[in-house]
Image (cartoon, rainbow, N blue to C red; front, side, top):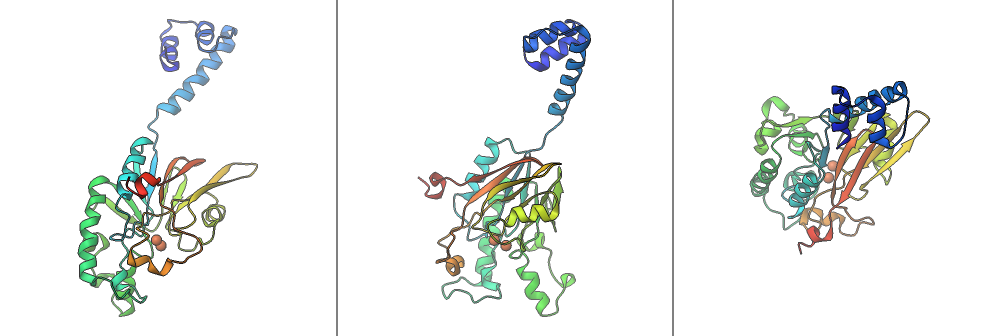
Length: 278
Ligand SMILES: [Fe+2]
Ligand SMILES: [Fe+2]
C-alpha cells in the first residue's frame, strides 16, 4: 500500500490514526499525536499531487549553425526528466549573414541562410509546440540592423512572422515561472555570470548566452537558497559562423537545463554519444 493509499484508508475511517501511523512508520503514537502526523502527511501529499511543473530549458542553438544531434539530445533529456513546460533562452537563430560583424568569406547569402534557418527551425517547433522564448542579441539582429536605418518595428515583420514560428512560441523580454527568472544573459559575463545574475535579481535565475560557462551553482543565506544556471548552447562548433571563437580559451559547452523548483535545478551536458553521433 502506498503512502497515499494508506492516507485515503485513514480518511475513510478504515484505519485509526495510530494504526495508520504504525503501518506507515512502524512507530507507535497516541491517537492524538498520530492524527496530527497524518494530517501533516495529507498536506504533504496534497502538495505533491498538485500539478508540478518541470521546466525544460534549451537555447543558443544559433540555427542554422546548430549541432545536428542537439535537438534529439534535448528531446530525450526532457522526456527522461518529465518536462512539462519548455523555455528557450534565446539566440535560436544566428543571422550571421546580416550581422554587423564581418561575414566569413565562405558564408552563404542572407536569403540562403534565412531559408535554411526557417526550415531547420521547423524541426524545433514540431518537437516543442509550446515554448516561451526570451529575447536575445542574435534573434534581434534583423531589428537592430533595420533600426540603424531608422526602420522601427512598424515597418517590419514580427519575429514569429519572419522566422515562421507558430504563435504558441511566445517571445518575451524575460519570463518568471514558479519564482525562477529566465533571461538571455547578455550582461551576465564570466564563469559565475549566472550565479551573479541570481544574486543581483534576488531569485533563482536561468540564462544562456555565455556558451562556455554552463552549469548550475547555488548560493544560500539564513533565509533561503537560490541557484544560477547557465544552460550552455546547442551549436555546431565547426560551423563557419563560429570561426571567430576557434581559438578561444574556453570551448562551448553543449547542454540543456531542467528546473524542478526555485531551489533545485540541474544542468545536463550533451554526452559524447550525441556529440559525435556514435
Ligand atoms: Fe549565443
Ligand atoms: Fe547571446
